[in-house]
Structures are given as C-alpha cells and as structure tokens.
Image 1 (cartoon, helix red, strand yellow):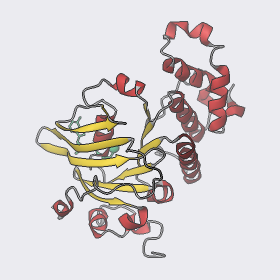
Image 2 (cartoon, protein in one colour; image 1 turned 180 degrees about the horizontal axis):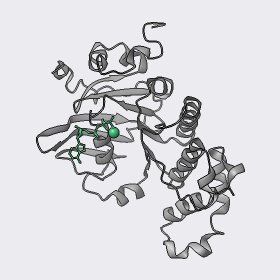
Image 3 (cartoon, helix red, strand yellow; image 1 turned 135 degrees about the horizontal axis):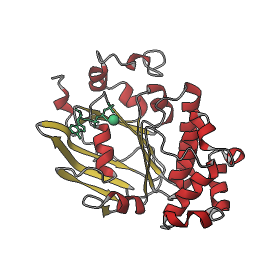
Image 4 (cartoon, helix red, strand yellow; image 1 turned 60 degrees about the vertical axis):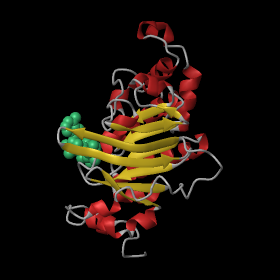
Length: 283
Ligand SMILES: Nc1ncnc2c1ncn2[C@@H]1O[C@H](COP(=O)(O)OP(=O)(O)OP(=O)(O)O)[C@@H](O)[C@H]1O
Ligand SMILES: [Mg+2]
C-alpha cells in the first residue's frame, strides 16, 4: 500500500473550483460515491464538483476507478453508495437514457459512428435522436435538420466534409464528428473517457482545444479522463486524482503536479509523470 489513505477525501468537495467564474451552484455534484466488484473497492467515497464551462480531468493509474466513476455518472452502473446531482437533480436510480435526456452527453473511447452514412447524416441522426424521433423515419429525415447539422459540423470544423462518407475520414476527423453528435443533444455535461486515445499528438491538441472552446462558449461542463499528461496539463482547468478507488488529490494543474502524494502514486508505474509539462523544468 502506498500510503494513499492519508489523502482520503482530502476535502475536495469543500474546496470550490478555483478557476470558475460566477456565482453558479455546481453543475455536477458527486458525493460519497462507492462501488465494489466482489471484494474489490473500485471506487471508494469519491466526492467532487464540476462547474459549467469547466474542464475537469480525472486522472490516475490504470485500474484506479476512472471509468467506473464515469459509468456511474452516466447511469450504466449503480453505485453501492453516494449521490450524483446534475443541477440539483439526483441521477442515481435513473436509466442511462433518462440521464442522457437531462443533458449528460458522452463520447466513447472507440468512435461510435455509422461508417456507411455521410458525415452530415451522422449528425442529423444524432439530432433526430435528440428530437426523440424513431429510426424508421430515417428516409424522410434525410432532409431534416440539415441546417442544424451543418451548423454543428461548422462548430467542429467539419462542414467542408459534410457529404463525405464517414468510412473515409481520418481518425481525428471522426472524433470531431463524434463531438458534433454529442453536441446535438445540447449537453450540459459532457463525459469523455480517454477522448484522444489512438490519436496523433497534433490531433490530440486540436481536439482538446476545440472541446475547451466549445465548453467555454456553451457553458458545458466537461469531465474527461486522459493518460497523456501533455493533454491534461494543457487543457484541464482543474484535476482530480484517483488511486485505488480513492481521490488522493485535486486542484490546479500546477498544484497537482507538485503534490507529493500524486508523484508517489505515479512513481514506478512506468508512467511519464516526470515528463509532465513544467515538471522540474519550469516549476
Ligand atoms: N464490471 C466489472 N467487474 C469487475 N471488476 C471491474 C469491473 N469494472 C471495473 N472493474 C475493476 O475495477 C477497478 C477499476 O476499474 P476502472 O475501469 O474504473 O479503472 P480505470 O481507472 O478506468 O482504468 P484505465 O485507466 O485502465 O481505463 C479495476 O480493478 C477493474 O479491474
Ligand atoms: Mg478506464
């Protein structure tokens, strides 16, 4: 055991997000979340908050419980204990679809688009879902929501490729379309579990810059996990750190980078934590 228990809880819920302006109540308030699989405590007493427009990175070594937290927030997993409130509304106990309808969007680690459709058709499909239409109306729907879909594609820099088939796009462009599809639901909270997995460094930066700009502009709270410390430190307003299911640290990128508990957790994990931007070099 690495002595992480000392950091248990670390009053993360009590410290308001430093970087978020306005008098707003938190968009997302997670309190005392716990989940075990058999005897394994995957997530233990996790509490944190997220403000509108804020980019919050949930980091931690493999198996720390990051995806488990995500899956509880989006309703795929029921926790053993805890509360997840979106704008004051309790999400625990709601079905994933109901949570999605309340404005919790997500992108997937592996892009989930329809390769046989064009770029714009994928986004129209997402708009259709948002409008709660059913798939059998798809034929007539080919002409529906075109303007909205084009506007969404423009917002992710993909309008020029609207008529191309998804299957011929570069991977980074597929991820942009996926982001446009998530935006079709007008999310207030966007969950992104390793959004840049499998992407080249430049594509990563572009996707995260885009996400950050959209989050600010539309006041969407973004909770994301990410193994690339470059991405985390460049694009997160705030970080929270999970280790063996417990939150051990939280704060600004600079504060987390210099936190000895965090360094201890990453030390010896074969991670590139030492290469974190600003680490040692210009701290
Ligand atoms: N459905 C499940 N059944 C049993 N154990 C599970 C299940 N899902 C996750 N776990 C275990 O819970 C722990 C936390 O897993 P989780 O996927 O949340 O970690 P993570 O932080 O997302 O890791 P990674 O960085 O590798 O994606 C791990 O030990 C994992 O093996
Ligand atoms: Mg995971």
